[in-house]
Figure (cartoon, rainbow, N blue to C red):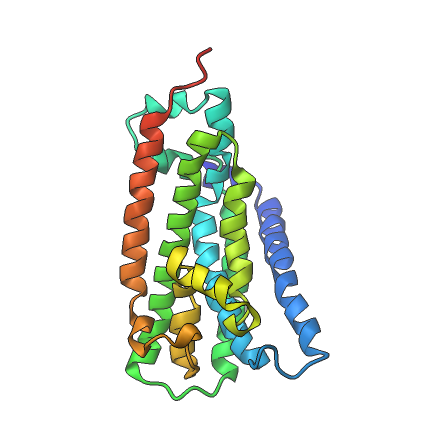
Length: 254
């Protein structure tokens, strides 16, 4: 229904999608400005950082396209309009994700994919079958890890009632963090996004395997192949958190 509504005004939809593409591109423009003054950033070339940026941006864009509407959940919990979703014969999570579905967010996906394609063309990578398979695996598992953070953040809103900005700090903030190489950050932060909130498995670890770069924290090489397991664990935990949050919902009492 929301897609049909958006496409009813095709020019407006095209302009909105392009605007989403352009606004997202400012992040990469900032990186280009940095490289107008330096040759390498944290020991990484522009093409290597473009690879990290494109992988994270595309995975994040896919999740934002599917679940970006979930930041409205806190408002529904606060005003009691979530009740209308509970009585419908459809999963509440799917209804919340589809609420005011914004197809124009595909601009973010395209922008990340363009940068990723540029990086793959420019980089001199010694391709193997495993490295080639790592690209789609990284995007799918990265989207799954981002999705788990989004769903867990939505579950937290059942308690906080309106914590959309807290949720954004981990979703949008995490995407911004992963656009840059791990060598720019303190080891404490790198440990946090590896062992606590495992965002490093979105692109850092698999991408460094493709680039032939050493892993942060001297991790063994096989960890580059664990994103599917990490994504499955994160999604399971997020699903449990969502169920617990939904069971705790008591409406507004009015």
